[in-house]
Length: 275
Image 1 (cartoon, rainbow, N blue to C red):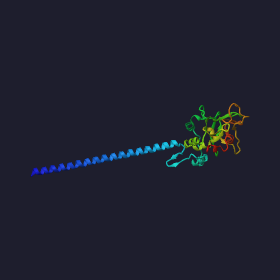
Image 2: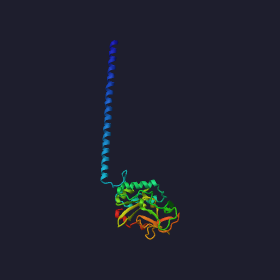
Image 3: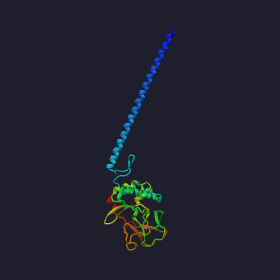
Image 4: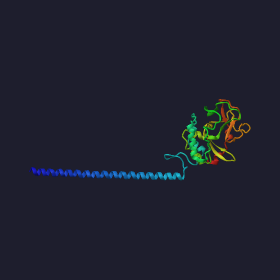
């Protein structure tokens, strides 16, 4: 009797152990299958994402100026002019507050961006910090904004500033690409420093002063320009008036240097560039 009970007990234990092994084996196979499915799904997702990236990259290469995108929102269009960009960037709101005097690093970064876009056609001369030939200081001038002030007396006819750091663009798309590649704090300021100039023989260029010359205020409200180019007053007659600007009168240390915008901008010139 005891022997039979033992045999029966041993068979029961073997049966249970067999069930345990079978269940464990099935569970292991299920886990392996699940991991395999996850791996396949991951690889498929990665392949699809790679395909989308390559497709968009090739699409962008074929049409580089289709607009800057943030998420699904188009920030700018290749058809926008300067006024469209001004409104889209809300520059009027930005100029309701005091604007900073930009650092040398900010100017340098803007020049590097420009050179990266136009390449060998860069108009910037590398041998100076800015285009000023006399010491000046940039100060806040409420309500006009910022202004340029002489740090010493400047005699009539003396060369004050040149376009050594002025970016020149030959086409609208390059200028548009430049504007939307700038740092956020620079964009609206650079738009105010942009103008179209005839650089000689009706050769128009979109021009941007990428130095403190950008802050030269226009004459008006009882002030007349004291910097410009008058062939009769300039001391150095070997330089070109389109690129060099002189003291039209004696300027005292501490006086603001004032420009006449109409003397170097081409009226209606933006339309020539589709801007």
